[in-house]
Length: 344
Image (cartoon, rainbow, N blue to C red; front, side):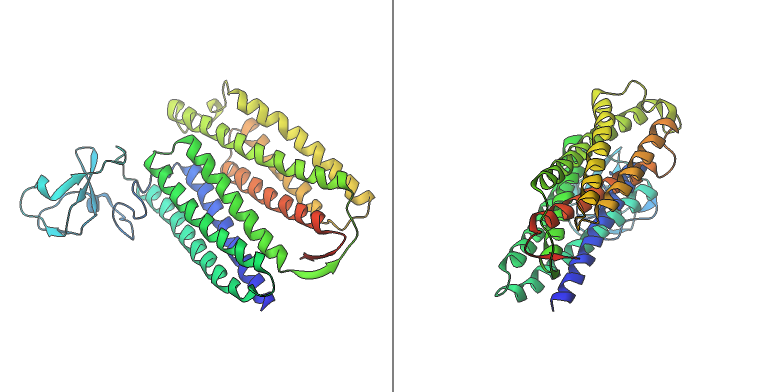
C-alpha cells in the first residue's frame, strides 16, 4: 500500500512538472491569451481549429456561452439558438472580462494543452488525497498534506483564471509560478514521508542552514527571473520577435541583480557540495543540484550572448523549478538525518 501510494505521488509530481513545462512553452510562444476565457476556450470544451468557428454565420446553431469575434471584440451567446439571415444583437452579450479578441490556432491549442495537463494534474492530486485516507491511523500528516495539495491545486486554477482575465499581468504570473513551486514542495514532502525507512548520520547545523539559504536564494532567483522575462516580453512587443539581439538592450536593474546572484548561487552550492563530500554525508542529491546549476547557467548565458536560441527560455525556467525541487528534498533529508527518516 505504501509503495503504490508513493508511486501515485511521484506520478502526480510528474504531472505538475509537465504543467510547468507546458507553461514555459506558453510563455515562449506568447500563447498565454490563446484561450481568452476560462475554464473553457472561446466557450468550447474542445477549442476551434479555424477562425470561421468564431465568426457569425446564418443558419448556424450556437450553444449558451459560446463565443464569436464581432467588431474586434468578443460576444457571448446568451442561450441556445439558431441564427437567421441577419445578426441579432439581442442573442449576444459583450464579454467584459477584458478586450482581447484575437484568434491564433497555434496559440489556442498550446494554451489548451497547458490547461488539459493542469486538469490531469488536478485529477491525480484528488485521487492521491482520497488514497491518503488509508494513512489516517498511521500518519495523519500524509492525509493533511495530500488535501493541502488539493486545495493548492484549486487555488492555482483560480490564479490561472485571474492571469487570463488580467491579460497576463506580471504580478499574477509570478504568483502563479510561486504557487506551482508550493505544490511541488507539498508533493515532495508527501513522497519523503512515505519513503523507505533508513537510519543515517547527523548533518552539521551549518550545512542544514546553508541548504535552507540556498533554497531561499533559488526562490528569489525564480521571482527575479519572471520579472526579467516580463521585460523581455515588453521588448518583443516594441522591437519585434525577429530582433532578438535587442531584447536585452538596456535591461532593468532586476536583470543585473538576477545575473549577479547567479554567482552567489554557484558559490553557495559549491560550498555545500564540498562540505557534504568532505563530511561524507548521505546527501547525494547535491550532485544533481550542481549539475542543474551548471545547465541553468549555460541556458542563461545562451540567452544573453547567443540571442535567445530556440528553447533556451523554457529550458531555463524548467531547470530552475527542478533545481528548487531537488534543493527542497535535500533540506528534508538534512532535517531528518540522525533518526529514522524517509529517503528514496
